Amino acid sequence: MKITFDNVHHIYMEKTPFETTALKDITVTLPEGTCSAVIGRTGSGKSTLVQHINGLLKPTSGKVMVGDQIIHAKTKRKQLKLLRRQVGMVFQYPEHQLFEDTVEKDLLFGPKNIGLNTTKIKKKLPELLELVGLEPSLLERSPFDLSGGQMRRVAIASVLAMEPNVLILDEPTAGLDPKGQEDILTLLKDWQEKYQITMIIITHQMEEASRLAEKLIVMDNGQIAMEGRPEDIYAQNQMLQQLDLDVPERVKVLKYLEESLGIRFSKWSLTPKEAASELNMWMKKEKNHV
Image (cartoon, rainbow, N blue to C red; front, side, top):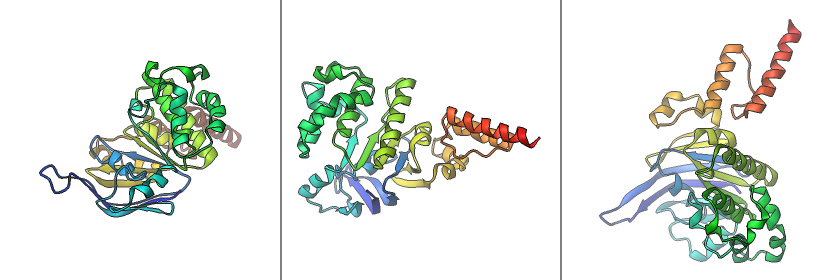
């Protein structure tokens, strides 16, 4: 589903002494079937932005279009319920969305709530747990007996079980060790490519953004400071530093190799294995030219 923000403003606690403008003049399009990353320091407006996509927040002014549905200040709750059947969101703190007695009940809650065939979904739960790196035996466990990393994986699985057209993830690898981070990033990338869903990642890690996103949106003080393809954003080192961000380490390495060897990599989001493969191919070509 294509997502478009049209001149969106959002003000918290409007017309009170605590009034705060969280979003200003947001106009941006997230293409259908792609992955976009929303990046920025704490308080830049990242979470406020994406919470408009599933109607957790409504614009104070302007509008958000998600597919053919429009969200504005006067959108009715009934319309938002329909929207949430298509937009799944994994929050930064998984314990905020896990509340049932067992993992199985938590995984079935979302599908049941939006009217999916839970008998059919239930049969897929062991496979879904394995997909996110968990043992099917955890289905009968309480989610609150799990580790933080396991809870995060269950939270992701609970949203995937709803088969959303749009998937939003707030810091999806927070609290995971390096292997766990890599596993989750691989899972998300494969899922997005397989089902061609529109995926939005909120992150402060440029490395994570470079691994997944086709488009970057850099937030600062409630506004979009930069947007575009990762390679175009990474080329603006000085601007990134002003926003307390930096080019991912893997991109720095690829840039160094390009400048030193004259090689041109296919993209700057290559994994170390992919970069080594392209470098090896380049070396073979150079050898044949000698």
